[in-house]
Length: 219
Image (tube, rainbow, N blue to C red):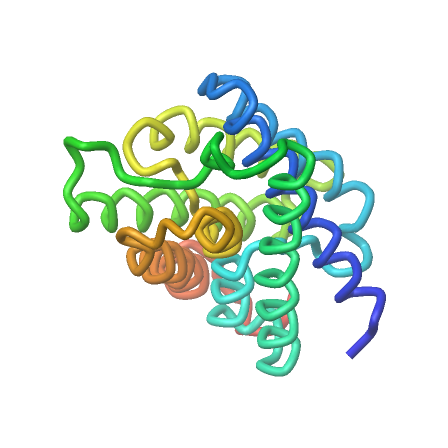
């Protein structure tokens, strides 16, 4: 495994949690949180996309693995690195904020949302994100604008889902703040929903929406 790829995934996931969750911890403003996450994706995709593809999300990695875009060894290495990066980002965030009283932007369910409803929301939102990754980036359709399309998709997903589930779409985004705050309530749905949504997006791309004549694994 190329060390550069793992470093890119670590730094990228660290930044997503430090900046994205940090925006939630510092201001709590939904638009600020959505923009912070989206801008991180856009900026770092241009910086590191050529190194690792900038997955910075275990669900994205699972989705690309399910679609035959990354091998199993790479997928496992990425996922472990992303989870570690997420915890590191939350730990440094807790340090600079002087503790965890802010909640560190943890992704939690609204009082009116049941765990099953939360699961469905996370599945749908992650499906939309990975669908954009497949059709804008993997397909090459959007060219150099793919990071913008992906960042915008994450923004609109957070604008809708943020008040309901925290709009994680990313197990690493949930794990870091959960460990540092000790709040593991309903954490299972954030580890099941996003990967399921990602796999559904991969299946839709490969077996329904991919241009006729393309063979899996080939351009």
